[in-house]
Image (cartoon, rainbow, N blue to C red; front, top):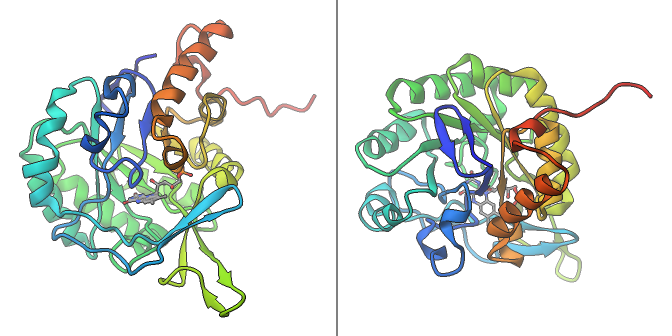
Length: 304
Ligand SMILES: Cc1cc2nc3c(=O)[nH]c(=O)nc-3n(C[C@H](O)[C@H](O)[C@H](O)COP(=O)(O)O)c2cc1C
């Protein structure tokens, strides 16, 4: 089940996704952290952030909407309090998700993270739809994305994954843009901009008005985007969006993902990432797949 991509080695291709697994340490009593490939931290910014006003999470048909607004402890507290306990789990890769309002903010966070031990890679959030600071402007404008990736790459002492927004017309174009500017891998998708209305008050159900849609409802769209991105670039594509079962993870691998992330599923089942990693291994054994990497990009679209 071991995989390697962009110089990162994982025990298996299942990671917990950013914003749904805290800073990892909160899950040490719940999940056997060395049974998952690793996890991506909640987005980290230069200064601590309180996030948006409530209500900021609601359940939808087959998914959820959130406008948390990138609440986080800030890079200094992350390095002092949250990262050190993770060194007890050396087989669980820690990928730190980074965001900022300007490219300079991203660079400053990465410069601080560079000196810390126990981080496998950085995931650059160029796609949060819920705040002015979350990078969606970077993720939807090829020029801005290029500039951000290039600047981050100059300072990062670790591989960089660029987390792409699905709120674009051509995901292939954005993936190519990230690759050409120096990304080591891309991860997709982040959430889809969405709206829910309380018809009695005629007010938005989320205080931020719009919010990001995630969960099983988005899986077919995410899968299509991962397939398109994987066809367009040579760097690895990390796939996510609505994965709740080992079979869902297999679909993303067949579509061309090198590894997968599990997000919203963790809200319904806090052990979802471990369950999916375990299930994937069983699925491979049952289907006589010797190496999980043999599945990657094997979608057959030929006419019958
Ligand atoms: C409550 C919540 C918070 C999130 N916070 C972040 C974040 O801080 N940074 C980020 O890049 N993505 C964040 N995401 C997006 C997820 O990592 C993931 O891209 C998205 O939810 C789609 O995957 P899923 O359908 O498996 O949840 C968040 C998602 C949720 C539901």
